[in-house]
Structures are given as structure tokens and as C-alpha cells.
Amino acid sequence: MSTTGEPLPETPGAPPPRRGLARVFTRLGEPLGPNYRKLWTASAISNLGDGVRWTALPLLGASITHDPAKIAAIDLFSTLPWFLFALIAGALVDRWDKRIAMAIANGVRFLLVLGLALGTLWGNESLLLLYVIGFMLGCSETIFDNSAQTILPAIVRKDQLESANGRLYAAEIINNQFAGPPLGGFLFAAAASAPFFLDSASFLISALLIAALIGSFKSPRDSDVPATTLRKDIAEGLKWLWNHRLIRTLAIMLGIWNGVSMAGFAIFVLYALEILGLNEVGYGVLLAAGTIGSLIGSMAASRLSKAGPGTTLIAMVLLGAGSSLGIALTSSAVVVALMSAIFGFTSVVWNVITVSLRQAIIPDRLLGRVNSVYRLLGWGSMPIGAAVGGVMGRTLGLRSPFVLQFGVLVVMALVVLPVINNKTIAAARAAAE
Image (cartoon, rainbow, N blue to C red; front, side, top):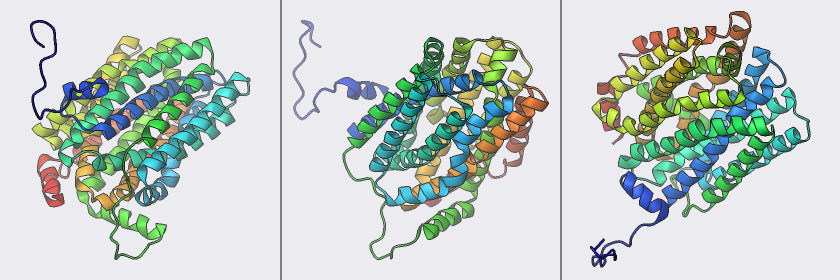
């Protein structure tokens, strides 16, 4: 700006001034293009709805029953599709245009959550309805999430992946974990159907934004290679991952971590209501408490990775174990909020580093299929964890799943040290290049 407040003349050949989201992204770092801004905005909006729904759904279940096993079954049915359909979803994603797949998946989720909202509004809510809707949402999620992670390398350069993933996680954290949970608790207290109407609208807006992406996003296939069956495509993805020691180990680690984490999260609403003495709004605020740590993690992940990705990953597992033990040993909502913040930090740093590693190492033509195998190992354990958490909560008390989480994570960190270290990760990156 000049001293008179008028804009300075544009430098010849300089790009036009950036406005709106483009200016925001420029301030955050290297601009990643209009397609990335659309993807980021779609993710931010749908994550706000997700945060609202993931708070309201267990509260709706708790208004029907306080049986830990029945409450945990909500998460069991929501995550079961990752165990049943992840491999098929990955093979289909490698065949389809990912933009179209993501838009359709969110369109289906819009209709499903709208149906749940109307059922709740008309007083027809039941555990069976929650189980069915949760399962069908999970089926759509296998398509959407596989496509979302596979589409990013077609939108940004490989050297931009950690930055792009970090910004996506930051948007997810702010909306899904910070803004969404307390808003969900508040809306549920006002009207049980309100959170689900908001969530359905977020899916619709997100679907429209994704449909507006410019270009074709089909995985490259060699023209001289004959068409294959889904079974052969799945087998190729399975073989690639199982033969890659680093990616295979990370997938198994994620499966163990997600399994024991889901054991605690599946009964967390009862832990908050009965042990911490919180109400619905307080439960939403408690879920949001982990946001500060998660947000810091999204901003710090890239820098920590450059300092030593292997060391950082092991440190995150041990730090996550410590936070789980802290939750198990306290009845203070303040302490639980602090432990949640630490756990949020560890989870996001882990996710940014490992997702970026997969996107950089896995060949583009196999990315959807290998990601689906990775997700099967990493997410397929979640329904098992939810079932274990429900049984443990009912028989051993609501603190027991967090003790389990602590012990398992400590042992896991020690066992994988020979495989997960800076040297092996550097070698895997070099081989991929």
C-alpha cells in the first residue's frame, strides 16, 4: 500500500492479487491451487457436520439405553464396513473417477442422515435405526475416504503432500473436534433432530463442491495391459502391501492403535456422563478439548517429520499410551481434557506423517487398492475394539478399556523399533523415487 492508502501499481508480469480463500492459503504457505481449495472447503464443511453427528449419535443412543455393550454397538456397526468392504472399495476407486465417486458417496450420506433426522424428529428413533444408519454411512465412507486420500497426489505435487495433508487435518480438527462437538451437544439439548439436519446439509454442500473439481481423476492404467477382474486387482494391492515391510508394519500398528482406541471411545459417552458427571453439553465440550493438541499437531507434523519421522512416530505411540493411562487414573474432567489434548496431538502427527509416506511411496496406479488394504488392517480392528470395549465396560468397569490401551501401545512401540526408524523410512523413500 502507498502512504495515501491507494493500492500500488501491479508489477508487470506479476500474478493478480489473491482474494478470499486464495489469500488465506497464501498466508498459510505455498498456494496449492483452486482444486485444492475446493477439496479443502468441502472437507472443512463436511467435517463440521461429522463433529456434530459424532457427538449427537452416542447421546441419542444414551437417551435410549445406558447398557455399555449396546452403546458400543453403534460404533461397531459404523466401523464394520471397513472390515467387510475396504478391499472392494479400494479396487473400485482405482477404476473410477475419484471426483465422481466422492460426490456420489457424500450425496448418499446426505440422504441417509436426512432420514435419521426425520426419524428422530417424528419420534421413531431406536437402536436398530442407529445401527442400520451407522452401517450404511460406513459403507459410503469406505468409498469416500479411499478416494479422498487417493485423489490428493493428482491435485498437488509430491513435495507438497505433507503441507496439503497438514492443512486438511487442521480443517478437520477445527471443525470436527473443536466447533462440531460443542455445537452438537448444544443442538441435541435443544432438539434431538437438529444436529442431524445440520450434518445432512453439510454432506450436500460438500458433494456439490467436490463435483466442481476441474479435471479427470482416474488412476493411470497401461493401455497394453488387458482388463482384469476385481479379484485380481485386490490381490495385486494385497501382494504389494504385504511385500513392503515398512508400509505393512505401519498398517498393523494402526490397526492395533485404532482397535484399543475404539475400545475406549465406544464407551466414552458413559464415562463422561457417569464417572465425570458431565451433561450433554459438557460431553461435547470435553470432546472438543482435544482440539488444541490436535491443531498443534497438524502444524508441527511436517517439521517433526523432517527432524526424524521414525523417531517421531515411536514417540507419538508412547505419548498416546501415557495419555490413555492418565484418563484411566482420574475422575477430573480437567485432567481428562488435558489427556485428550495430548492424545489428539499424537494422533494427528502420526496421521500426517504416515498418510504422506503412503502417498509418496505407493505407485499411483495402485494407490487406491493398497490404501484399501492398509485401511482394512488399520480400520478393520475398530468394530472388534468397540465390541471389546463394550464387554470390558460392562464387566470390568468403564476405566478398564483405557488401561488396556496403555499396555498394548507401550508393548507395540518396543516391538516395532527395528522396523520403524529414520533409516528404514529414508530407504523406502529413496526406493520409491
